[in-house]
Length: 525
Image (cartoon, rainbow, N blue to C red; front, side, top):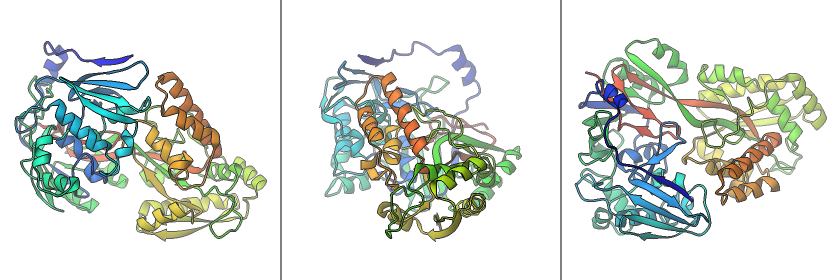
């Protein structure tokens, strides 16, 4: 039996007291975003600008710490998993409230989780596909599982299971669930997170105000958040966001171009932060026997794909594209910050002699390969130019095909590509999501590559019901070994989240999953 039970705090530690002396409350933090949020609802959020805001408005039963891996209590004070993994008992904290002062009850939790499991609502219901039923108890809820699910605890700390007010939702105007959710993305809606939505001008601005009934305590022993408000302004242009920060018109700017990081690090008025992320940049390789036109595929063998990987100088790409802020991938299936990532060292270190040997043996030498890139992406343009030169050294000719994002996605789904650029950021604090996307054939033909390995598929399926952590870790280690050897991707690099903040801003966090966390942010006056 696995249990997490949390004792009430009896007092404040000396460390917290010392830290609290530096914390200052009040004020408004103005944050420049690259895009606006369309709908901040736990179930329907499906774009990063929506997903990454959810936990500012809605709390989850469990939470992840800054490392993106460690799970700690949220609205739940504890949980208990039965020995067979088929019953999860969750206990709510005493005295927790929505922002309007009404109690957060087991009925609210049952309602919220049942919304999250409904396949007719939003794109994320599959994450709770193992849940058979949800029963409200006197002080929490009980989940009856169809089968043991090692991911369920992580899912209870994920945005899609955040808790909404049953009464507010049912009273909202709208003929269906999505219309009600849309109506509730408005000022005055009772929420469970550290902030409430004060106002919003679509495509332009949005303001969060402190939730006066929020439960979490700050370092000074008083409820979070420290800020009175967070004001968001939408500025799509990178250079303009930075100019506004340098002029003191905003306190923070996200998605700083890597080419500007060194310059901003040298500015004493700015804290240039590089937050560890789960973002990986990779390229799916069509691994089928034939191309879409029926011609033989020169990339069909693992030796050919290995040759392509050995012929890429990843360290050079990290310098050229990320200006030294990134790092080579060390796990073939996920970022190094993801749970169960196996660090095998840099994948396929640059080795032209080895690449030539494999290219000759596999018949890759003299082949012509098309690299499909994203039109208008300077990173993709740099990547193509570098790869074209590097692969020329092993006798592979590369031509470019520039397309928009929908066309690139369609090519991936149809298999009408040789190699194309892609990237990934985890939405869930568990490797099952990314491993299922990249390697498990039934999900999406192993990210469109057509690679299909029976051992990998069986291991992935087994891992999704394995509740012994050591056994599951071994399953994932073997999956990563299989995937690295088969090389259905160009394994490129990881990148951080680059956020620039005024020097007097403290405590802001962007988690490895990308979530923007303002609850512990404060401004030194």
